[in-house]
Amino acid sequence: MLSLLPERLDRMLLLGAHCDDVPIGAGGSLLELCRAHPGVQVTALVLTGGGSLREEEERAALTAFCPGAQLEINVLDLPDGRVPTRWERAKLALEDVRALGEPDLILAPSPHDAHQDHRTLAQIVPTVFRDHLTLGYEILKWEGDLAQPSVYLPLAEPVLREKIAKLHEHYGSQRDRSWFDAETFGGLARIRGVQCHARYAEAFHVAKLVLGVAPLTGLDPGE
Image (tube, rainbow, N blue to C red):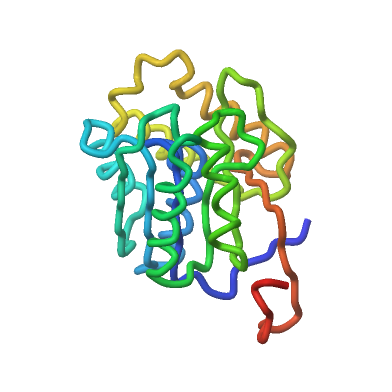
């Protein structure tokens, strides 16, 4: 299996409909990427939970999951479960983030996600970020919407253990959820690891990926 390493990673954009979405879907990857690229600029936008305990949890969690990064966190107060009815405000928020600079990598929900808030955010992303590498993370839940991923980031066992520990440390409001436990997070990571010849992994969905033998220049984002 061929491994492709990024030419650079100066800026990352993290997009979540809810507090805890990004760390659940990509927490191990965040730990690995931030440690491999000290000082990387990370901007996080979360659409719901603003002004609540959930925002406090999210700020502490993302700080822990992005060690050494230059981190900016924005948590909006859109109503949970009603993001599709707030499409315009959500899109304006993404456009505001877009104006801050060009991310080298975007982590966002997957377009096939059955949760209406996740799916709405995933649908908006390519209307604002048309020429950017966007990896759609996956979240195991009741709806049974897992699909076969196309991108894998292997995780060493200590990194997976660290991810699980940080999730439980920082998201106390979620500990009584039936799905919020080490077996859920570890089980999915083990399956994805088998699929990429690793012990554990996080997996992502990508709609478009351009390969080149040299740095690409002169591409029109509309093409």
